[in-house]
Length: 149
Image (cartoon, rainbow, N blue to C red):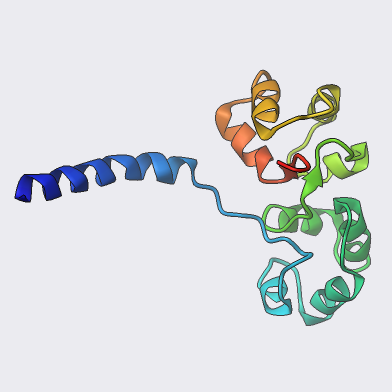
């Protein structure tokens, strides 16, 4: 019996580094976040959080960006978007929406659009994985979705 417990523990411990390596913190969705969660984000205060809540729902990242632009500069908004983002529909996102993803380049924005329509997140991983590392694909995946998937 002891060896079975040891075996289970060994298997679980062996998987921890893999889980930690692939784990990425979820982005806060401003459409569903409470005011308290919003205020905890970089550069946001109660007044900005109330403005976000009042303008919800946001259909696209640029809709949120237009609300935040009244109070935050571009650098502050980019820092914020590493922690909070309106999920981006890969099949309908405009170039302006895609460019709001932190670290996005015009070249990569073109690659996002080239493979439309996406039928699954697996397709996104495969196609975008041709251009960037698995870690970068995983980072980018946090910002996007494929409808119905």
